[in-house]
Amino acid sequence: MHPLRVLHVAAGNLFGGVETLLVTLARYQRRSPEILESEFALCFDGRLKTELREAGGRVHELGRVRLRNPLSVLRANAALLKLLRDNRYDAVITHGAWPHALVGGSTKLMRVKLVTWAHGAPLRVGRIDRMAQLIRPDLVIANSRHTAAAVGPQLGNAPIRTIYCPVEALTPGTRSRSDVRRAFDTSEGSVVIAFAARFERWKGHELLLRAAQLLLTRATNDWCIWLCGGVQRPSEIAYKEELETFVQKAGLTNRVRFLGQRSDITDIFFSSDVFCQPNTAPEPFGIVFIEALYAGLPVVSTNIGGAVEIVDETCGLLTETDGEAVADALYQLVTNAGLRDSLAARAKARARELCEPELRIRDIAEAIRG
Image 1 (cartoon, one colour):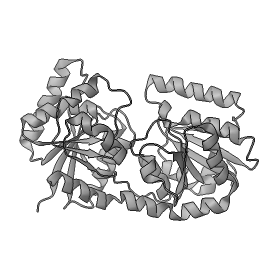
Image 2 (cartoon, helix red, strand yellow):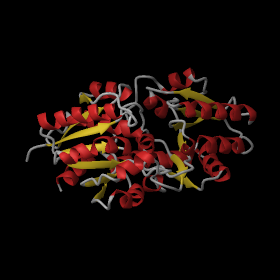
Image 3 (spheres, helix red, strand yellow):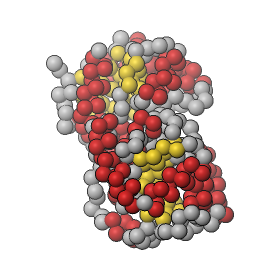
């Protein structure tokens, strides 16, 4: 049986969990070429294009697109049609409503199997989501049971398969734990709570900081929070400024470090003690949770969305979406080294069980063939 050849279509102007998945697929293509051959079509230059090429991925350019500019849409679809004519792809996989609305119609016109990878249901259904819903895919791959339940009725009740994202195991970097902590003015004995996400309100930055404010009066030992993530949109700049103001007013200046966009997140995680991302709206899946588990970190999150499918009693704590509950969970881990060690010991096994890349890539190929 020949390897399945697929073309992944994504925007390419942002970088987050979806883009991390695409880079993983590019990297594992060289390790498991007999299973799945992935190529990539992007509309914008950026970090994703760079990392895909560094991982050995073949990247095609569709050109910069604005959906409100019909000429740019026509040019992108012409580029896609040429790709489909010149190559034998078994499927086109769109990642998100925007690329699905952009090229879904052309893909079906060429009688190539159209797969949409649902990375989450929109919090608010907008114009682009409604455009995408007009194009029924041949298959939906959902990144969690939560996502599958949310998007199934929106996509014409197309066949749907839940497949957790393939996520590579993290390995320690070249820098030692003490070197990383020294760089962020953090002592060896401090319990470090790591957080890594874009500056979107539902990711839980504010809830974590409110819990930290409560923790100030409870945990007298040394602890701090490393907030990782860069701003990618104007709205995120304003939100980050709000959070920085809150930290100052809450007396958390010596406890919270804003570390910005990081290319060394592996070093960050291996130098931390706990990972906490208390979402206030459902996380569709949460690749960052898996990465934290691979680094041996107990995970604290809220009892909603994809986190419920990842975090169990063997590897972390789930809480309600309020500051008191999150503070309670953090207090247990900050003050109880035995509990931290117990959860950390089983974290990596949990990550492998859910997201071992070669197994999940086989699942993807089988779903598309089916």
